[in-house]
Length: 175
Figure (cartoon, rainbow, N blue to C red):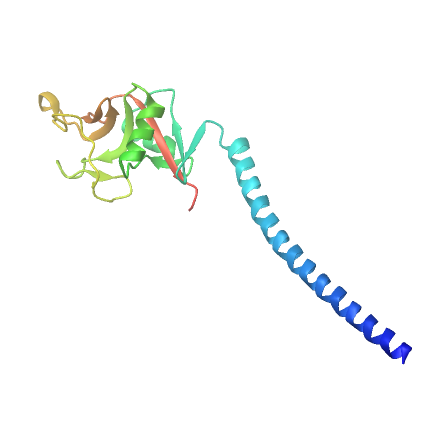
């Protein structure tokens, strides 16, 4: 009888140990999955630090503000050669961010009406929805062909595309 009782106790003990092991394995699996996510995020951050020097991260995009000046077309080429494009400003927050990183400099953005005068389009072909034009802009000042847009405090302005200014590239990290 005593042996039978010991066997029952031992069986109950082994069941508890087995359940505890199963719980610990489940915890280890979950921890392993979380570690994979953290590892991926750390690798991405290391990539940003090592390979994207000079770029700034904001809301799922990387931004590069130039220190030199180029025409709008040359600026765009610079961006596209780096798997980016001139910035597309989607909302007030992004507009404020860009004004903050560009300071008082005039910087090209990815907006033009070069195809049809007065029909402003972004470099990706989308039509202009959010508008942050400075007062009196766009204006084709003194009858000049001003078909490219730039940020010029306190808002956007149209300028001749051949003028040389700094620029801002944008690259989505989600693509």
